[in-house]
Image (cartoon, rainbow, N blue to C red; front, side):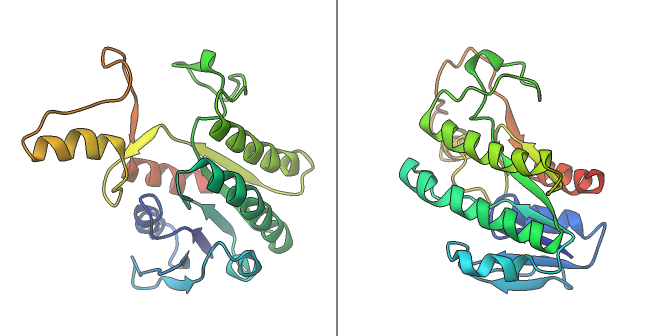
Length: 210
């Protein structure tokens, strides 16, 4: 069983479509999951209710965390650490592999733009500190050999099912309305974006390597 926590979002939807190339045992977990493939198992729960995480993970070979909590610091600080701790405990309990979809917030500014796995971890924002804490939670268990996990990182992303993408809203949507495109920061510097179907494809491929 391949289980997607946060299956109704910009990554979860295309990920379910990609996973059908490898298995017909896919469990979609979210508040209101909808089948992407005919054989999908839908598992509706509120992922804020941590008491339900263990049952949602039970029987899973691989668990994908692609949920996106509200983009607000206080929500991140309150929700992310206990949620991930519950997921890690469930994966350990059921011997499931974990694939965590993350961003690049935890890295030092000096790592930009040539970011690698060995780039210095030195968060420059409070949101980055939250992501650093999550990274350390996962790696602590990996180093103890109590968890098998993969952390996939993405730049800002855009694409289908992603209504909150800055690139979608400030560039594509504006141009479609006949308005000028807008951008954050220095427009003379290259900014990398990730196309969500590409991210989903990489997640589905890399799960075979953990």
